Amino acid sequence: MVTLKQIAQSVGVSTATVSRVLNFDTSLSITDAKRQAIIETAEAMNYATPRNRNRANQLGLTRLALVHFLSPDKELIDPYYVGLRLGIERRCQALKIETVKVYHTRSLPDPTLLQSASGVIAIGQHSPDEINWLLQYARLLVFADFAPPEGGLDSVSSDLRLAMHRLVAALWAKDYRRIGFIGWMEDYAEDPYGELRCSAFVEEMNRRGAFDPRICLTEKTPERNTERIGYDLTRRMIQSGDPPDALITCNDNMAVGAYRALHEAGLTIPRDIAVASFNDTSVAQFVTPPLTTVHLPAEEIGETAVELLLERASGRELGKRITLESQIIWRGSTRRPEPAAAMTPGTPAT
Picture 1 (spheres, rainbow, N blue to C red):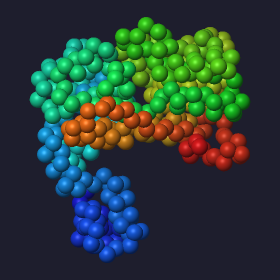
Picture 2: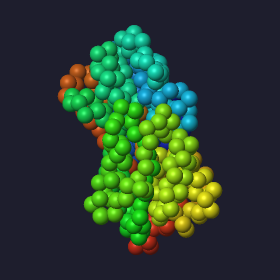
Picture 3: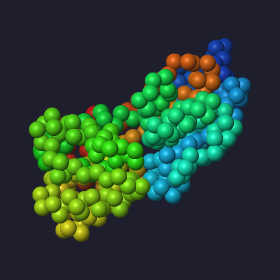
């Protein structure tokens, strides 16, 4: 846990000064710039004041259940969801809230796991039956990285539809016209284009008169976010005989599989086919060439979910949906942005 001493050393002031600033001591004589530096440093280091730590306990938030839509082995191969969970756990640790992890299995978990918790954070997309189960047994409930259609529920997520519209528009501005997509179908879905990123892709390409179903492939499979699915779908697309000049994958794991399929086919990235993705996990920087991807703020989503639970415990009754910003990170898997865009690879889009 971050201490006052660490913050004081970082800013160059005494521990007593940090304590008085974070406890809003108006009698303290200190410059506005130094006060702001202390507050910003505390925020950056994720410090929770004793007042806030005690507030969580006073509100009865002592134990949270993290209900994950993935199994433990599936989470470990998806750094995005590891980061999201760590964001939750880090914030809970600062607030002295115990966490218990409840992972996805073939059947619904024991409801006593939820009933014994002060609140529940549901991570990822859940089916209508799972949502009803959560509502039945959770005292307080927040969804992280998923916004259920039902009203009155709390959620925090990225706007994947808007992010996809922006990504397609950005690729189009770089003169890519034949743009393909690979993704997955939800287990309970019937529409092959129903997933948020996919439906936004279809909508944007149709708007531009350029949608081709032969290069928009999805698959319903338990391994929906894996490298293998990215490899299989990209290989199938290449074998169709008329591949795209740019390919968008649903996440970075699938992009790694797409890279392998393209390399095996003797195609060069981005000369023959550009590749862009979602999540901006660590792997995006280390593949060759580095991967252009949409950065989704996983850890911030987790931290915000905890704050929403605190608000609910404080008595807020109105449902709240929070959408956090996403950014395109340009790297070598796509053509460099034009100089007029004032962008360099590895920097956020404006």
